[in-house]
Image (cartoon, rainbow, N blue to C red; front, side, top):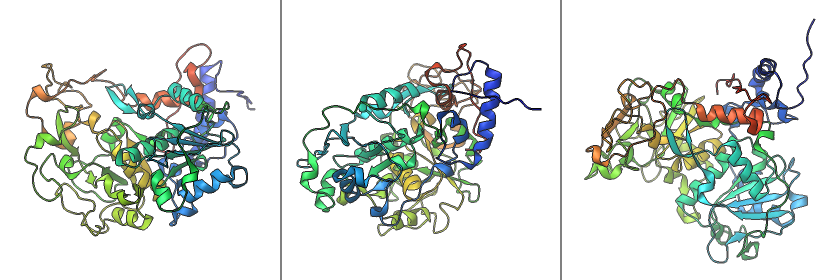
Length: 483
C-alpha cells in the first residue's frame, strides 16, 4: 500500500508532507540536468558545481552561450527569429555595465526582439548577513532578483540574456562577470546566458560588428513579459561558497596540497596575497599597510590558497577580452606565460607544471569583494568548464573574522568564537586599532554561516512567502549531491 501525494505548487498546507516530497525530489536530483518541466521540480535540480560548469569551444565563435563573440551577437541581432539559439523562444536582452565609447555606445535595440539596458553597478550586489556577520557585495536575494527581472523585462526561461561591458576595462569585466554569476546562481539555464567577449569598441575594431550595430541610446522601455527566479527549476546556489564552506576545505597548514579535490584561487595581486612581502617582482612592499583594503584588521590569505592575478586572464589590447582558451588552460596546468606569470604558492614562487589545478578539483575563487574573482571564475567555470564556487564574502569577510581589536576598542570576534579565520590564515595584522574598522557581527557563536544560501533555497521553493500558507518557516533539504 502507498499514498499518492500530488503537489500542485510550491506552497504547502502541511510542512511534514511538503518536506518529505521535497526530500524525495532532492535525492532524485543527483543526476542534475536542465530540462525539468515545472517549477515544482526545483528540489530535483539542486545542481553541483560540476553540473553548473560549462566548457567553451576552442574557437569562441562557435559558442551559442557562455562566452560569445561579437560576430555571434551580430548574427542574432540582425535576424533574431531565424538565428536565435535552439531552445530559446523569447527575445534578446543585452545588459550593459557601462556606456561604450563614441560610435559604439550601446548595442542597437529594435524594441521588438532586441532590447538593450544599462544596469547600475549597485544592482549586481546586495549587503546581506550570513548569520555570523553582515557583508557587502553579496549576490542579491530573491525578492531583489524578481524586481530586477520586472524592471528590465527579462524572462530567463525564454529570453537570451547577454552580459556586456560596453566600455572596456577591468572593472567593467568584473561587472560583466557578476551579471553572469547573479543570473546563473538564481537558476538561469546556461543555454539562455552569455558574456560578450570584449568591449563594444573592440567589436568594431575587430570587424566582428560595425558602427551601425550600435546606437547612442538604450531601449526606450523594457518588454512587458518577465519571469521570476522562484519559477526557474534549477537551483545553482552551490555557485556560492560560504564562510562555513571555506573553513571546511582548508588544509591544516599553508601548503599547496594536491589530491584533496580543492583548488583555492586568490585573484588578487601578490602584494595583497603576501601581505606586502612580495610586490610581484620579488621585492617587499615598502609599507605593507598599503596592501590593506576597507580598513581591514589584517592582510594575507587562507591556508592553501594559490595566487594568480585576475588581470592575466584578459587581453587589455583587445578590448579586455578573454585570452584564448589554450593560454588560460596553461595557467591552470601550472605553466607560466611569456612574462613569467603563473600560479604561486606561499613561497611566492611558481608552483610548477602539473602542480596547480588537478583533475576533479573544485575551484574556490575570491579576492577582496569577489569582483576581481568574477574574472578568474568566468575563466574556470565558463571557458574551461571546471567546477567552480565563488567565495562571495571574500577577504572583506574573511579578514573580519578575527580576534583583533578595532577602533571602537572591542575585538571584532571574541577569542572563543568558532568563526575565527585568523587561526587558519597566513597574515599580518594592521599596525593598530586606529586603522581597523569595526564590523557588523550578528552572532559570533552562530550555529551556521549559511544563512544566505539557506534563505535563497527557501525562496526557490516557496517564493516570497518563505514557507507554507500557515506562515511556518520551512528549510528545504541541503544539497544531497555534496555541492
